[in-house]
Amino acid sequence: MRLLTAVDQLFLLLESRKQPMHVGGLFLFELPENADSSFVCQLVKQMQHSDVPPTFPFNQVLEHLIFWKKDKHFDVEHHLHHVALPQPARVRELLMYVSREHGRLLDRAMPLWECHVIEGIQPESEGAPERFALYFKIHHSLVDGIAAMRLVKKSLSQSPTEPVTLPIWSLMARHRNQVDAILPKERSARRIIKEQISTIKPVFTELLDNLKNFGDDSYVSTFAAPMSVLNKRISASRRIAAQSYEIQRFNDIAERLNISKNDVVLAVCAGAIRRYLLSIDALPSKPLIAFVPMSLRTDNSVAGNQLSFVLANLGTHLDDPLSRIELIHRSMNNGKRRFRRMNQAQVINYSVISYAWEGINLATGLFPKKQAFNLIISNVPGSEKPLYWNGARLQSLYPASIVFNGQAMNITLASYLDKIEFGITACSKALPHVQDMLVLIEEELQLLERTSKELEFQGITVTDKSSDKKNGKTKKLAP
Image 1 (cartoon, rainbow, N blue to C red):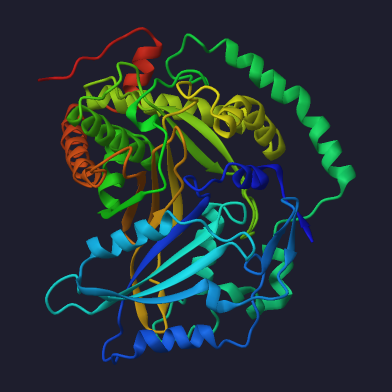
Image 2 (image 1 turned 45 degrees about the horizontal axis):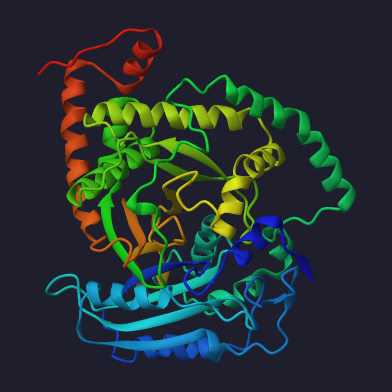
């Protein structure tokens, strides 16, 4: 048996009927050339009749919310579902199906995951290949987003001619001698205690240092987030919105402004959220705060949760896109600098102390109008090479994440080939028409493209403005 970590237990304790704690992914495939009508059915049969048993973490069931233990009565029929959408089925109908399934709880008496193979999706355009999809969901207590993406990459092939013979839940059996290398590392109690004691001084040094930064708008405390419509109580209904955007567009903006691609991603999200809230007359006068996960994985493990978080000021109170992106850039740098001064154990304990009251608030709902942040924006690395499933090319992959009381929207991105895949998960009752965000993201991206080109022409970067602001100077832009 394996002991659950405190973070893993938290995801289980927070779960309720209206608040499922699983993450998911929607994978859209193109049928191979000359594939017959039974191609998808044969894939499903291959998975159903695999004689290789499931491996960690897919064979684990809960034992009193304390341990994971091996399931001795694994039944693939409970986990694998094969459906065909009513015709004609567009991506819109596919997302509606996924939205319904994403709002349903996983059965805790079984290993906490499901796989849905979905047929009948129309081609992207006339003459393009037919398509099918795979929707996979797994409890966040088993894996985080980084680990989930690694599992998907390992389960597919980089060659259209290489057969994929094992289902994802039997993946580790392919290289039994490597299983120990990809599971979370177990440590002795003595080592854990020693490690925890060593974190006390540096963690409290950082916490005290935070007091010096309260006057700096780039520093974000856990009490800075304003109340907004994003922070309503939620229902069990979900809406998944998804769209692909060219990654080069983000890279070009980042290069012109001398900032990171992730800063650009946050700025695009911030601008789109600002537009969305203005459209429903619900924009707070104070800036929204984003909770941005950062992976602490230093190995190749594919299970467990190894994350910390940075609070980012999204500058949604600012009308000027450059001022907004400059504030985001400084805010993210503030958090990154702090974490660079700490090791992994120190970062985790710093985060636990910093967000302890928010965890209690989420679990109890004692202070519904007091949130440490307004939404989560997460970026998961994908694959730079095309992936295949028995010759079927993976066209797109869209993350589906978690929303909970006080956090009615989540934006998670995954990179794949030359695209950034946006997956927006929301409570459809708390935030109607959240699919409008996809159009607003495109509008904000176009605005930043124009703005960055104008600034490049004038020889101005975001880092120039940050330096000028620090030195008490201002730099006006030409009209």
